[in-house]
Length: 466
Ligand SMILES: *[C@@H]1O[C@H](CO)[C@@H](O)[C@H](O)[C@H]1NC(C)=O
Ligand SMILES: *[C@@H]1O[C@H](CO)[C@@H](O)[C@H](O)[C@H]1NC(C)=O
Ligand SMILES: *[C@@H]1O[C@H](CO)[C@@H](O)[C@H](O)[C@H]1NC(C)=O
Ligand SMILES: *[C@@H]1O[C@H](CO)[C@@H](O)[C@H](O)[C@H]1NC(C)=O
Image 1: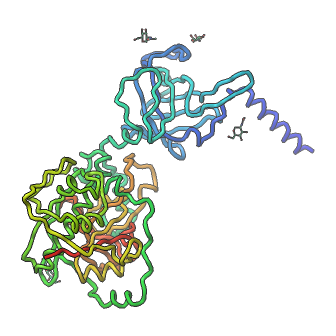
Image 2 (image 1 turned 90 degrees about the vertical axis):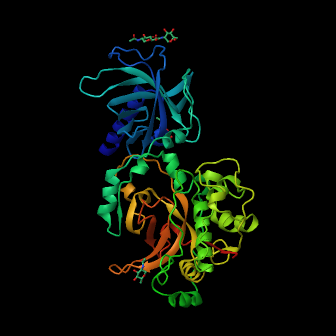
C-alpha cells in the first residue's frame, strides 16, 4: 500500500513536471547528428532579447555524436546534452549554446519539430558569461545542402563536403595510441598528410567510386591448393629473385583517386619484366587510364579488373611518355602515334569474383608474377611507417582529433610474402603508390593468412603479351 502511494505520488509529480514544460517532446536520437547554428551579432549583454527579430550574421556547424561529444569544422571538441525532452545545450570552443526544440500548437494539437530549435541563447563560458548572442538551430542532413534561415550568402556545400574540405590534422594521440597498444608495426607523422584535404586523402586511398559495399568472403582453401601452396618457398619477393629485381620503381599518385591505374600499370610492368627476363623495363601511363578509359572514373576511382585486364586487352596500354602523369582528370591527350601494348587472360584469382583465397594468391604470385589486390583502408594505415600492418582500431578507443576519413578500397600490387623470424607472423609484401617517403621505402607489409583488411578477397591477374 505504501509502495502504491509512493508510486502514485511519484507519477503525479512527474505529470506536474511535464505540464510545467514546453510541449516539445524530442529524444536523444532526434537531436544527435549534424547541426547548423545560425547566429546573430555578438557583443550583447544578458539583457539581449532573443524573441525579437534577429539578423543572422554567421553560421556555425557542429556535430553532436554519441555519447556526448560535440565537434566543429575547425576540429574543436566539446560536449552536449539533451535537457529532458525539451531542447539541448552544447558547450564548445569557449561558448555555450542553449535553445528549446521547436514545436507548433494548433488549439490542443501539438507538433514537435525536433530538427529545428526556437531562437536560443549563446554566450562565452565562465562564471560571468559575456558576449551574448541569439542563434537558431537546424539539423542538417549530411548528404544534403543545409537549409538556411533568412538570407545568408554562402557557398553552400553539403555537410559532408564541408567536413571533407578541411585539411587533415596530424593526431599525435592517435599515433601514440597505435604505437602503445601493439608492437607489430609503427606509426609516424607525415608532413604531406597535413597539406592535404580530407577529401584528397580519401581519393589517395582509393576514392569513393571504388569503394566496395559488400565484399566477397575469401573462398575456402581445398586440400589440393593447400598442398600446392605448402610446396612453395617460405619466402618470396619479386624485388629480389636470386638477386634480380623485377619490380618497377615506386610512384606517387598524389591526390587523384588513381590507385587502381597505378596498381594495374605496376602489375603489367612487373610481368613484362618477368616475361622478358628484365630486357623490357617499360613504365606504363596511368594518365592514359585517368583521361581515356571509359571503364573507370578517372580521379574518382575504378576497378583493377577492368583496367589491368579488360582495358589492357581491349585498348592496350601506352608508355608513360605518351601521356605523362598529371594527377587530375582531363580530356584524353594520349599521343595517338604511340604503340599500344596488350594484355590477355585477365581473371580474378580463383577464376571468378568471390573465388579468391590467400593460398591461391600465394600460388599465382610465385608462378606468374605480382597481383593487383584491393584492401580496406582505415585511418591508422595512413600513418604506417614500417612493420607488419594490421588494423588497430585505435581511433575507437578514445576521443581523438576529428578527421572524418571514410574507409576506402585501395588498389595496390602484391609483390611477395614472408614470415617474421621473431614472431612467426606471416605477411604479404605490397607495393603502394604514395611515393618512396611513405612506409618501407614506398612498400608495406601486412598480415597474411587472416584476410587482413579483406586483402585476400579480390586479387586480379593478367598476362601481358610480349
Ligand atoms: C514522448 O515521445 C515518446 C516516444 O517518442 C513517448 O513514449 C512519450 O510518451 C512522449 N512523452 C510525452 C510527455 O508526450
Ligand atoms: C522580447 O521581444 C518580444 C518581441 O518583440 C516581446 O514580445 C517581449 O516582451 C520582449 N521581452 C522582453 C523581456 O523585453
Ligand atoms: C537587420 O538588417 C536590416 C537590413 O540590413 C536592417 O535594416 C535592420 O536594422 C537590421 N536589424 C537589426 C536588429 O540589426
Ligand atoms: C637478395 O637476397 C639475397 C639472399 O636472400 C641477399 O643475400 C641479397 O642481399 C638480397 N639483395 C638485395 C638487393 O636485397
